[in-house]
Length: 135
Image (cartoon, rainbow, N blue to C red):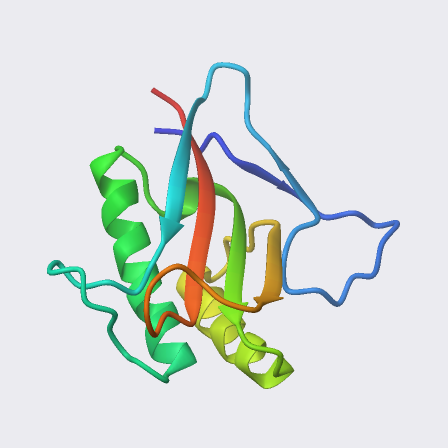
């Protein structure tokens, strides 16, 4: 099945970023909008408390599961937003490193944000995503 997502790298913008500047999907693609993926286990407990990278990995695992349930994969993701409850750039970098490694060469347009607080007790990371699949 052909991929619906086309990543766009702009030659007019700085080339040293670790993500595509834009992405497109054909009108025939089915869009999958995912809720923010949280570092929760099946019982609703926040995992990897105090560990930004561990929570990013847990968020990604949950994101992959939600994508699979929707008939998609990480390669179908068209954009992400990574939220980190921290004012420390190194925490944002730690979360970003986990996300970048998981996505590999599929370097989708992404936004990395430091926020004051997230919804669950002890939650440090949340990952939002949109995917596009060809049916």
